[in-house]
Amino acid sequence: MRLSGFALRWAGALLLVFITFNPSGFSYGHWIWPLSSEQIPLKILTGLGLLGCYVVYVTATFRSLGAVGVLLVFAFCATLVWLFVDQGWLDWRNAGVMSWVTIMVIGFVMGLGISWSHFKKRLTGQFDTDDVGE
Image 1 (cartoon, rainbow, N blue to C red):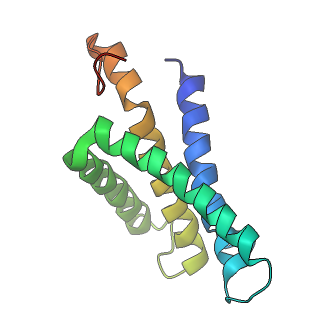
Image 2 (image 1 turned 180 degrees about the vertical axis):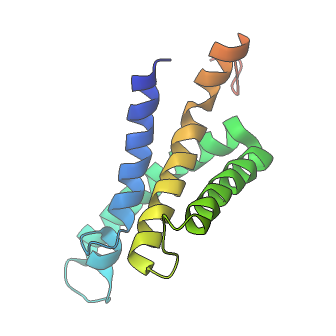
């Protein structure tokens, strides 16, 4: 897998998280809240589509990294954010900035998770297989 493959997978994960919620005010979360009877079927259909995408990304992430791997990647990202706050590069009191950081971290974890099998194959030569006989 090339860097462009990872970048596309990461961009897809980031886009999924960004569409679901972001502090700009243009997201699925802002569209459905406050709840109203306006465009209910479209809102539900969109929510089901987003949920389906999350199932694909989260399932792939947990299958390739495992629960310990996901926890380790989140811990790494949290420590990196802590370092940036400690160095004064990030203001943890600014909710908007921290929302963007959270979106980036979740997108990174899902992007890495969906790409990890490719990285592992490239590094070790070992394939990950979940389904046999297909």
